[in-house]
Image (cartoon, rainbow, N blue to C red; front, side):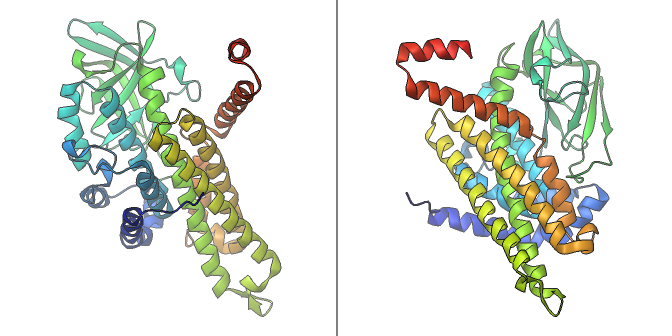
Length: 394
């Protein structure tokens, strides 16, 4: 089977790469050091239509197919993982509303999200809740025609500047999803700084103190919060992070090829040393392998195959761990220079570590992949009746 981009996908990729080279890469280290994404960059990003990439054209989106969306994430990730994180969380909320929102929610919010007039953030994690997302502690209580939210969210990407949050809370013991605007009474937003990586992603804590929101801000039905709304959005987020990890790895590879072609040691360029060439060769092979897994995950999503979720987990697992390994080698190749803020590989290394944690940690992906492997084995080795019996024991 031959994997080849269409002419339209190649054109889109070239457009994304040109934007990243011109608008992002020259300034990304500065954004990292300042721990801030300038509003002017976000405005340019929105004008390109990237914030509405996955949304239908009827709502002002670009309605790109899933592979093109992956290519966008790779190129933005190659330039700045923080900005790619904005694309991720904004798109997760947009996708959740597109899939589970009411007609009025879609008509009001989706055009604003597509244009970038409104920035959205995904609010699931809490101080005591990370991987075990079903155990969220934030509560929502129905009072007359409103919901009253109490609790706290943490590590909310672009929470400092978001206009609306997709917030998950327990309502009568049922995990549910709600839209909460930043100016809602009882919502206090506190910036988080000093992170290891994706430092320009402007993280925040959200504190809900009898925060009152309209009843119609419920997304989906009560109890749909995790199994439906969050799960579908997180699957999209994992896909985005997988491609973004490929972008980091590609950036490291490009940086190392340039550096080893310019830097001399022992009278020859670094690229002439066999061990350096071995490291470059491994980078090339692993970047290509990670990208192919992302292509496959995208293909299964495109055709609606039942294995798309597990294939996305495989892509996210391999791409994120590969990015961390390649970034570590990139710093090693750069030596002391790689440990300074004058070379981007230091940022790539810090950002790559974050990719192994967000949208499901490496260990969570391993659990998902192993479960998938056992299920596939059972289904292939047994009769339908025996398969049902064996699956029930898992």
